[in-house]
Every structure is written in C-alpha cells, then in structure tokens.
Amino acid sequence: MTNPEVAIMMLCLFIVFVLLGFPIAFTLVAMGVGFGYYAYWHNPETFSEIFDNQIFYLLNQNTYSVMESDTLVAIPLFLFMGYVVERADIVGRLFRSLQMAAHNLPGSMAIAALITCAVFSTASGIVGAVVTLMGLLAYPAMAKANYDKKFAAGVICAGGTLGILIPPSIMLIVYAAIAELSPLRLYAAAMFPGLLLAGLYIVYAIVRVSLNPSIAPKPPKEDIPPVSEIYKDLFISFVPLTVLIFTVLGSILGGLATPAEAAAMGALGSMILAALYRALTWQKIQESVFLCAKATAMVCWLFVGSWTFASVFSYLGGHDVIEHWVLSMDLAPWQFLVMVQAIIFVLGWPLEWSEILIIFVPIFLPMLDNFGVNPYFFAMLVALNLQTSFLTPPMAMSAYYLKGVLKNQIELMEIFKGLLPYLGIVLFSMVLLYQFPGIALWLPDYLFGAYIP
Picture 1 (spheres, rainbow, N blue to C red):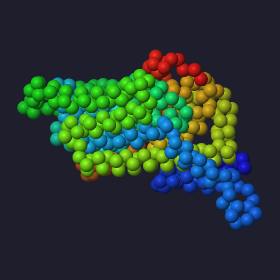
Picture 2: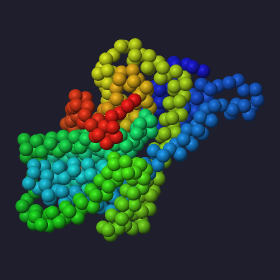
Picture 3: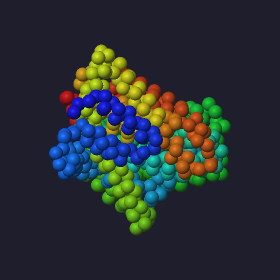
Picture 4: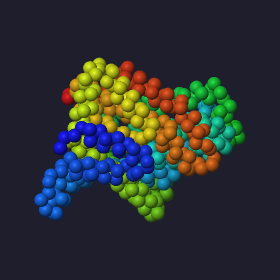
C-alpha cells in the first residue's frame, strides 16, 4: 500500500516522539509495526487473520538478521575492552603521567586531557564513558589548578567526542552495517581525520592559552617530580595501553583479523593489562559485563527498530519522494554534499548521532551514485559532522554527561560556551576534508587498493 504522505507523516511523528523523550529504539519498533500494519494491511476474513500481517514476519526477520550479523559481533567485545580499561584506572594513570610530561607547554593539563581522551577513545569508542571518566579525573585537577571553568569543560567535552570517530569506533561499525561498507576500509579512512581533529584541538588549546595564560596557569615548580620519575610513570602507563590499541587496530588494518576477531583479542588484552596493574577484580569484571550487555542491547534494539522503520518507510514510498525531490533540484555534487551535511548539522541540534545515522543517513545513501560521490569519503564527512551532535546546544549530550558528574561545580551554560570553539574546529576540519579528500581516502586505498564501486 504505497502512500508517500503517510511515510512523511511517519518520519515527522518519529521526530516529535523523540523530542518528547520517548526511548528511541522502542519508538522505532512501535512506529515501524504500527505503520507497517497499515502498509501491509489486507482484509481479514477471520479473527486469527487479523494477526496474519507481513509486518510481524519482517520484525522477526530483522531481529534474526541483527543477531547473526558478523559485523555487529565486534560491538560488545570493543565495549567490554573499553569498560575494563576504564575500571582498571589505566586512564587515570595515563592522564597524570601526561600531565607531568607536558608541564612545560601552555595548558599542559588541557593537552594531557585531550591526548588521554584520544587514546581512551581508541580503547572504548564510547563518548559517554570518555566524557564521564575525564570529568571525574581531569576537571577536578584543572579546577584545583585554577583553570577557567569554560575552557576546562570545553576540552573534556570536545576530547570525549573523539570516541565516535577514532577507530575502533562503535559508530563506524554501525555505519558499516547500515551502508553495507567494509568496516576495515572505514577504519582506515577514519584514522587521519580522527588524528587531524585531535591535533586541531590540541593546537587550539596551546594557542588559546598562549594568548591568555590566565585561563590555564602553569603548575608550581615544587609540584613537578624529577624528570626520571616523569618518564618512568609515562612509560608504565602509556606504553602498555598503546601497544594493546595498536595491536588491535594493526591486526584489523593489516588484514590479519576481522574487527570481531581483533575485538576479542582486545577484550582479552584489556583483562591481561588490568591484571598486570593489579586492578582486575571480580567486581570490576561484573560491572564491565553488565555495562557491556546494557550498551549492546541498546545498539541491537536500535538496529531492529531502525531496519523495521526504514523498511516500512521505503515501502510506503518515503525514500522515493525524498530522492525525487533532491534529484529534481539538479544539484552539482558539491551542492549535494553541502545540502546533506547542512541537514545533518541541523538535525544534530535536537537529535543524537544514533537517530541521525540510523534513520536519516540511509535516505541519502542511494543517491551517492547519482552524484558520483565516494561512499567512504561521504562516510567520513558524516562521521566528522556527527561530532557536532554532541557539541551543539540544546541537546549537546557531552555537556549533559559532564554536567551529570560535576553536579553544582559548573553551570550548563558555562559548558555550552566552552564547547563553541570546538564546534567551529569540527566545521573547519570538514572543509579541510572536502578540499583534500586524500586525508580520508589515501590510507584505505594504500592498504586495500583503489575503491571500485
């Protein structure tokens, strides 16, 4: 029963329900089933035939497809690796060591926080975990050192969002499953954009403090331990974690292991690392397993709901209407990219990355061939753009994560003000990527050969 008007109403109602605070995954399932029942409606002759509707078969098949997806197996394993690393206080050791090692640089604590966020992001891929943990570790230390509140909050929130860009990003695994792209090529494509963004954050922090040293005073000389102790602590905290991360990523990018196999190796490695630090307890394992299961269940239900929602939306003719509208404008490829990224940026104000990625991005994916856009280049533009969904008020989730752990230590508006410069940096990095696509495409082409559609 094709009815494009109903499809558009379905999409609008979804946005309304999300803004009202309904759970995203179950809203997707409920609307998919409700509108799907209408889409696949047939006149039942008996009471039992009322439930003989194709939407129930579709929901069942989507659930089974999620459960057997090889790509999605990597998600719980990467999550478990991140949670074990978090609870073993390895990140805290790393931050304190980097803070001392960078004491001669302007804004040393901010630099240490950004580097720690980048490293921990590669170990977890979870924005909420990174921002929350760094809020507990770095913010009190910066506040004690008389750092400006807005500056400190901006550093932590911006650094924490790197988790959805730098591999092994959970977002990239989700994107690979949605767009049917190789997660290996996506990981390779994300390496340099992720490092570029982290580097731009660090450069901004150094320049900002150099121009206004009062926002980040240098640590007193009496608080600086001997150089030998600094580098000893840095070696003990930094080297084991980076070896684990590069082993996991190297095995993926080198073609030695699939993301799921590498994630399993990373999960085991994180437990060995925690044991070496004498921080592996039964309680911490239980907490890591519980948090891993909770986050994985959320992701899986998001997939079940989104695939059901998208299938019904497409069956009703929603995709055809939007595709016809876009193609009728006779846009140049660059105009198409600007329009799509502008839409994603605006959607980032009220929505999180998961809703944008799962519901809205697939609407534009079928049009890439029409405009001759490389899907991996497009994916990196989207990945950078999705950083803004964590940094753009009023739904800047990184700000709410930080506010949640700091309570009355800082006002929400102060966090928002601290975020704005980093929002500009993300947009600048998107411009750089558009002007120099090789930032994203060189490494995957080098490792796996030129992309052939």
